[in-house]
Amino acid sequence: MKYFKTEDTRTAPRYEITTKVFEEVTGHRHPFEQVNHNRTISQYGICPSCLNPVQLIGIAKQIKVSPYGKHTGKNIAGFPQWNYIKYEYCPYASKNDHRNINDDELLPEITEDIIELYELLKNQFDRVVYVISQELDVRFSSSFWEKAIKQYLVNRFYCYPWLTEANLPYIFAYKSMQHQSIYGQQFVVDSDLFNALKKHKYVDFIPLKDDNSNYMRLVSNGGFLNLHFRFTEHTQKAINGEELKESMIFCIDDLISEQTIFQKNINFSENYFMNIVNKSGNEDKRQQYLLDIAIENMPPLNLG
Image (cartoon, rainbow, N blue to C red; front, side):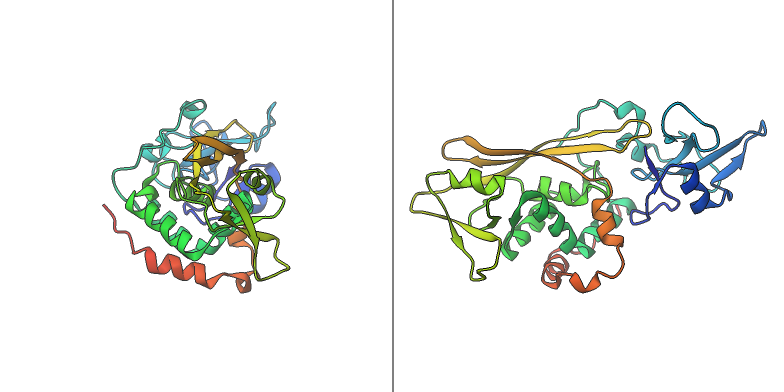
């Protein structure tokens, strides 16, 4: 892993694993630096994904690759207790380097970690929507997002074991937008998606009331349309000292012809969403109507 945390919460900032950053953030204080029984000194932090303790390799001693974090596999004084279940689903776990994700797998019980991510989705729903809209070149209606949240809840997708604060917008799209109709949604003019849809014989785009908008609404030109979103192949790959590589494939399917008319690989950004959340001075840009949708449709979760 390329980043570490100093607090075991989802919203805690991630820091790059370098000697300079480690010194600035920790000041070499305990428990981040500890003397071992043989008098050697080790550096520690918290995994940004599973929140288990990790040893930071290459901070005090130069190595051939970039400094990186390695799971300790045991309790370390001053850090959260080692949790093997969380480690099981961590993309940085060495055993997960080449594993296949089971899209249907859900954690059986609601934990504090799940609740924290659930509340992050609710409290930052407008920013989740922003990331999705930017990635897909689509602007969605309020009713679309209400349906998406309900699909997310009724299927308990908040228990998806590969969910983290970093991939939250992408996984929300991956699960809650699956198989939903694109009819009536607004698409960025001249985007790759817009141009692919425009070739469909029954698709038409009409301008919005705002003539300055860069969006047009998808409608039918008289024929029957049954075009739906599809997401597939959520993958993760992590290499020591490198950023996490995480992606999914986004498709538009014509359910009448049974043809895929658009396909795009989407690479997740490991820091983009949380940088937006943590950026100061942008509270005036919040979209209250989206926050209201989340508040009205997402009841509290309880442990167990």
